[in-house]
Amino acid sequence: MSEHLTKDKLLATYLKERRAKLDPAMFGFPQARRRTQGLRREEVAQRANISPTWYTWLEQGRGGAPSADVLDRIASALMLTDVEREHLFLIGLGHPPEVHYRKGEGVTPRLQRVLDALEPSPALIRTVTWDVVAWNRAVAVMLIDYGSLPPRQRNILRFIFLDPRARATQYDWESVARFVLGAFRVDAARAGAVAEVEPLVDELCRLSPEFKAMWRDNDIRSREEGVKHIRHPVLGPIAFEYSAFSVDGRSDLSMIVYNPVTPEDVDRIRSLMDEQEAAPV
Image 1 (cartoon, rainbow, N blue to C red):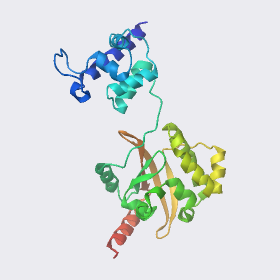
Image 2 (image 1 turned 90 degrees about the horizontal axis):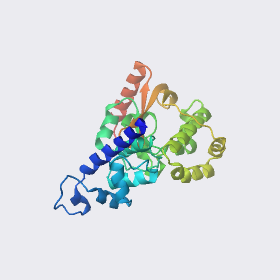
Image 3 (image 1 turned 135 degrees about the vertical axis):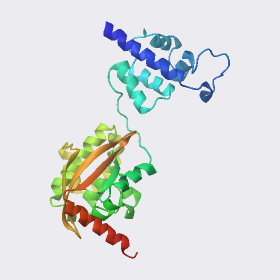
Image 4 (image 1 turned 180 degrees about the vertical axis):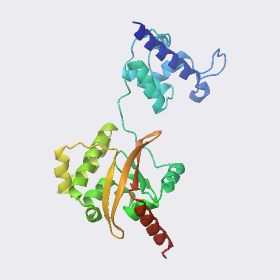
């Protein structure tokens, strides 16, 4: 019983604190004759489309466990960020909210500068649908120049299954393709983006018999780091240690960094990048 009461008190305190931080003028509510900062309880209830009495009980720690739908509406009414919304669910229901994919747009200049600072290690940013939205010059030199592709074609699965260059650079193309597809399936499901990837899956099933067969196998792979071997057309065999990182504040993005395994490979990549930069256009 004491644990239940503590949980209700945590929820009540959090709701009151978040309500106090909102400016009534932002929502068209009158500012006159307010004894406390922020919105009134009945104004939050109005925005969330729930009973003012029940919302008052929640802030008093005696409303009982709200449903996920109610918490979602309260989160919207209080203008909570993704992190704040997750915290609301954790203290209100004891688990995070159900994942629903929300696509973001591009990357910030600061994040692009992070990629550029990692050279000569290739580094890129991909979405949960494995569209590549940012990359550094080392990616263009060592893996593929995404800038030469139309935006719609800048997808790792499209490259692996439809571009002959992917087969030319891989020592064991089928093994790599199976791993990529299994990891992609995990990412899409984890992000709640299963419906969003259906058009891409349908397209690749039509264009690639190998993709269609592997997709039906339902293999699941997940590895945040490992070693990648490629056959570069100029430098020959190169090995990279790769790592995947979440982008803070952007649940739709991941950063992939490929670190050359040996110092000699670092020097070779840097020299090739310098040569290509110095070459006349």
